[in-house]
Image (tube, rainbow, N blue to C red; front, top):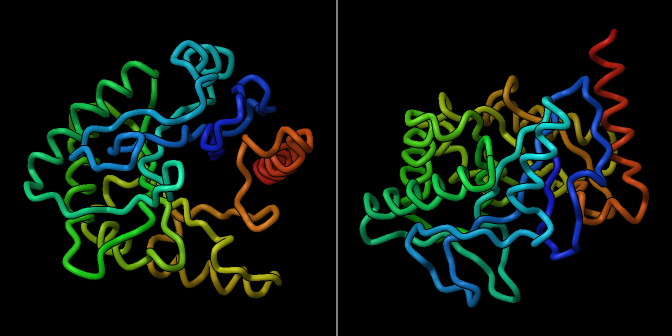
Length: 243
């Protein structure tokens, strides 16, 4: 799974090396239910990823590589210099309805297969996050709008995501945990972190990851090193499946 388009760099899908022997997910970053100034739009999502990632380019890369799926990641950390936060909508059913309608249109326009949940800031208590997101994913799947849904917690956001997973784990396909936030430096430390997150979520749905310069690998930054880590990780997966 590769995040792409979050930084505004004019990255393109066909620049990223893709091995056909594995499942490859592009995660377009981000679809945000806020306006460009960061004002909440009550579940009405708009795309904020790089302009080079057009609907036509999504269709083309999927046609070239049948193993590729494309997803929209929801929210992220910020828009411009405005930190994005989960807010508790006054009417949860209206938020769910707005989110379903706006994402359905976005998914159909961009030929997407799913969504990735990446809200990263939350109120201290009584959050409606788990209910709203769980019901949204359920509705999108029940209506066959999406075929895959992932969540992207990290070390300070595990509590709301555990609540989400505990209540709606049957409609969540993968846990795209951001292991770089645990700041482990040794293999044993990584293993302990993985065991902890596997216990909190589900070991069969938990994805491993690794960091580059303090962040997970992202296509936007990888062009500068010739997509070295994308090549290495795919080689590893291909060799693992052939053993």
